[in-house]
Length: 617
Ligand SMILES: [Ca+2]
Ligand SMILES: [Ca+2]
Image (cartoon, rainbow, N blue to C red; front, side, top):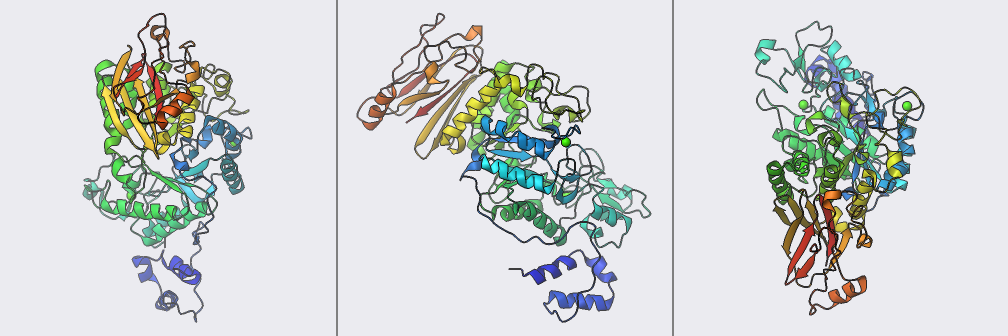
């Protein structure tokens, strides 16, 4: 256990790494030595004043107001700058986000991932941090943050935020100090080399050298920056740097934050020009940060680890990591281009037979390497869009919806890099994001695809997302259950989920033609249709599949099952044969479409481009 006084000494000594210590007058060194050994007779020397708050932050733990397992609910990834402006300056902010919490609650999300909200230098994505303990002034204040946490919790929603361990902004005051004076106490907080550039040529990261001369450099020392010269890497081998991050992580946890999305963790520590990605040291260090965060009750950690996501999802490293690669397979499966789709269906079906069920899933995010916005990838084909959404929202993993995805928001065109992915959220046909001039153009399809219009239309994409989240929130097996009996049959995917005796079956047909799926099941099984809503049986098929049924697919989607009372009695008596009846609702085009259970075989008829979900028991 670290006492306050020892922590103080440790803290002030920490920045004084070898070269700095050597430069200390002997007397001062003696005093410092006395401090570390716990002798407090001498007065502490006046330490250099840090240009930013580096004070230790002891843990202050409170019980979490969130329910057990909250992190298995769906999250929304939110770019605060682009979500809702509250004061007319054209920039989204925390007060604006607070105003939209009711919308998020009604959608059924259980968690928010906020892209960086700490003070940053880039004035866009926020990954160039200048102060780890201050809210980005354009987004609001600490008080706004506290209100956001309180109001989110009141709605049963947890909040995790981005934390950038690997690097700061070039404008971070510690880096500014470090680059201006080689004898700065913070010089060793970053990574330097005095070697001539020709000796550093072996280093190439993302097709460029990671070694950069500081601005106005008077020496030949270069700093190391994995993600370009604007974001210098911290020296994560320096214990003082690690402590600073630990304290800063606790700073937000103490205020009630529910966890972190840890950015770029395979890049924490580099060994040499060849061994710089995903080094064992980075895994160990990431695991230590995760343990700190999870020492607080019910906190969640999700890592961005493109190198080996399944490894980083292991409990000893992050517990969860984004399942990069799965999003492409899901979108390819849903696009339906025959051969590619079949191979992709097989890949999707087998994914969670290999990967930890705790992984984080998505269709796309704020980075262009993860693909365009889903709307653009599907060229506006909403039927296929829905199949992709259903797939990742019903598979294992914690799904992360990218803001605007639930209304089919289109990306921008003709902007560089990944800016097209981060337009303001389309709240109304006019935009509804700001009463001022938005910081970036609005989405081109906002007239038809905005939250207000879709709220009013029960057949909209927004209502489809709500229906999928209602399934997850109503059936624990879909949120946190096992992954069993995966089937990839041509363009049909089926799988089962089980949690504490509740078993669900999901079947998705990505093909343009109806498909029959025969599944072996227990002879005592009782089947209850959860989606499309059983109440729609016998009604028009349009709408039953959430609007996916076009004219070509007017064919019965019905399954069907004994009435609830018969269902109960059947399950109560194992000697009775399954009572599931194929009460085939028929359509003009197909009188044969029906689902049935016979002799331990379940026959499902799947209309084209459809999703069916059943409860089995
Ligand atoms: Ca604003
Ligand atoms: Ca690094």
